[in-house]
Image (cartoon, rainbow, N blue to C red; front, side, top):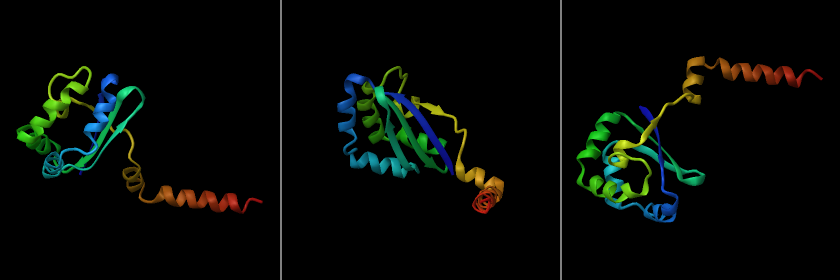
Length: 130
């Protein structure tokens, strides 16, 4: 499974309309996102129109190809393109992908549980140091 995060900039003057377009998203577009294999998909809007997106997928290249070939996604992206600053192409294909630098579960798994036992040991020591 791959975790994908991306960033886009929504035009500040179009923020209200952008939000309205996502409440709700077309049912057929939701179905295409799911059919592409994307799951746990979320969008987060920061001050000034900075948009962060996140999803999980088994094969991101295949999901991108599926959506690139989808007539429904093409219509949705054609309508959504005007909301974003500085894009060259469809928003779903041209968004800036973010580099993951930390994931708790991965680091806990790599630590083999020693991080959890270290925390328990610190708590035991702190609790008995009276």
